[in-house]
Image 1 (cartoon, rainbow, N blue to C red):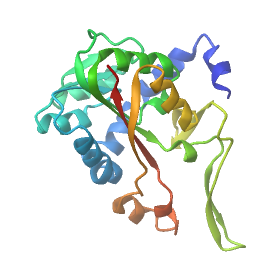
Image 2: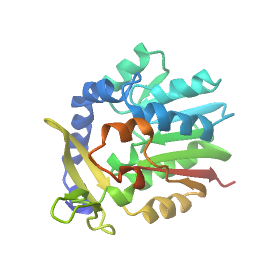
Image 3: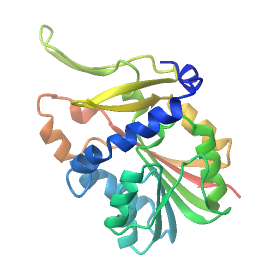
Length: 251
């Protein structure tokens, strides 16, 4: 569905909020506490290295707080912010400092943090401009903004891995890349999650417009633990599932 058409629906905030509230336990069971190879082998090390030395970190959309706890173990003072009661209840049980709010209206003073982390969140968010403006507001000058996304080139509408038995070929089918779009995807049996597709340039340029300068980018190959579970896809290691963007707050 076209993103602007979806945003014109008066009930869209409720649709998104209920989706994450309903699916919190599914997420926690499948992606936290060591249950997911991509988090353990790739995302946690990237976050730890990318925010090394940070003192005051906001984990925006941090769910149960697993990445905030990684940074806290390294000495950072971390705060998990999420709009899901269910996620934050678990975050507090697991030892994280947690705040209930949305990314479009952060309850913090200007320049409260020297680092902001957003991991696998903005591709589920409608209010991109508002969130980026708030990230820039709460970051101190020279502060770091680490953004991890499902790679937009693989998240296009209708995209997917194709196994052409007749030709003996495997490849990733691309959908319309330049169109901003939202779909409710069934990511597991009866588990529907909203995915917003935007071209990469939308993230970079709209962040830059709000004082956030891109200083680095990573497109890592899937980690061994994921590749081992996808042995039917011979070339899965050739396609980056993750995109990592490093920004700095301009003075």
